[in-house]
Length: 366
Image 1: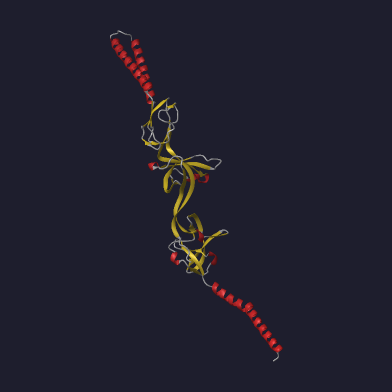
Image 2: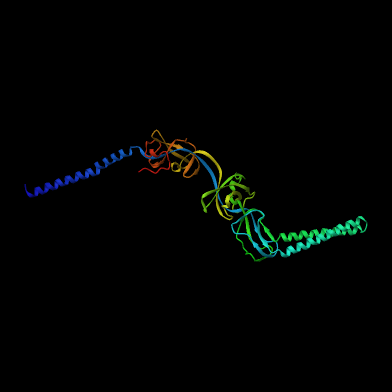
């Protein structure tokens, strides 16, 4: 065979091989791939599910407020003078009647002694005139004048006793003292601020609530107060007062709550976060991710006998990632939480988290 015929034969064989490859790539391979894909897609969709459970769902409203003492008074002197004794220290708890401050009282004591001496003298005069009157030795007018002068002396004693009492400042009620603004030995005037006394056995918290809730807020309702200063502690109180007016600017109304404060834990002026429970009830709940919102319909995919069934539901309040189901499900029903995009109504499903159904918060198994 000539060399040219050999070359032509090799070229023809190469052309036939190329044509066969192209035919397989374009027509046979796609059909095989489609068949494999069809076989893969025909299997059940892999999903994760959670069981509907019963939990206590609460409807709450949140607010913020500031504490203030149940009773609070500025300690001020009622007279001028020099401070002889300052028996207070910041943070001290004192009982009602405890001596807080003594002003110099030498002059006040002298005035009282003088008034008492005058009273005793006039009392003796009245006694003598009364005896003389019995024998008509003096007139009735003289005796009556002595009675009036004795009453005047009694009033002078009362005033002197009051002025002496004003030299000592007592705690008007049991409470906790604040910082002192003066030192012992300082001269003060009547009305000078010395310190503040707070009764912190209970604290009052004032806060505002939107007007839309006005009809639902009543005295006696419980509130829970927290503070960043005490992150692991909750303070429980009750609503004591509800304002009768709505603020026209904020469209809210003022509310006050009283919180027991054992050990004077909470100071006056502390910022507090509050939660007020409006209602609570036991309801069927599922994880929020199981809910599908579409147009005017809300539904879930419930797993029944290995198939996904579309179930229309009526939802309620949400809390901590759970949402209540008012209609459509019963406790124990299983709903799809992961893989929702793979299922249709009536499609077969393969649950891949069977071992984790006891806890809806289990991690996804890989």
